Every structure is written in structure tokens, then in C-alpha cells.
Length: 80
Figure 1 (tube, one colour):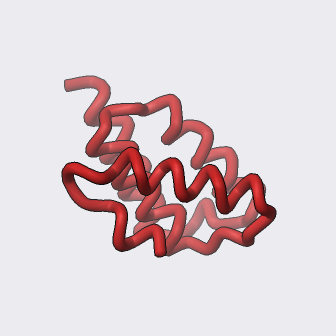
Figure 2 (cartoon, rainbow, N blue to C red):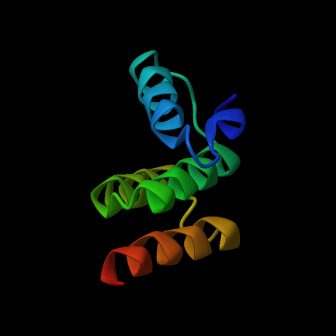
């Protein structure tokens, strides 16, 4: 569901959907978190990326290559 929202123009809706899923207790997987990181990059909200990084570590996803590269992309975007 999140994947459908994560594209230019509707990234904020994707983050809102993620927040609602989180509030409802839905489990996250690496694909969901990668999509949310992409939305964070598109919206240039690195602070959300930091929150996702914490989530990655708590779930044991810190070695997922796609997530790590999305996280780097999100943080690099803030530096530009």
C-alpha cells in the first residue's frame, strides 16, 4: 500500500499512511521502510529518516542493503 503513495507529488500521503499503520500496530518490513525512506528523500525530511534508522536497528534490519543505501541517500539529500 505504501509503495503506491511513494512517488513525486504524493509522498506526504505515503508518510501519513505509514504513520497511521504505525499507530495501528502494523508490522513493518524492509520494503515498507525503504519506501518510507524514499518519501523522506523526496520531501527532504532527514529527521524522519533518522527515525526510520532507529526503527531499522530495533527490527534488526540494519544490514539490509536497500535500506542502508536509501538511508544514505536521504541523509545526503539534506547536505546538498
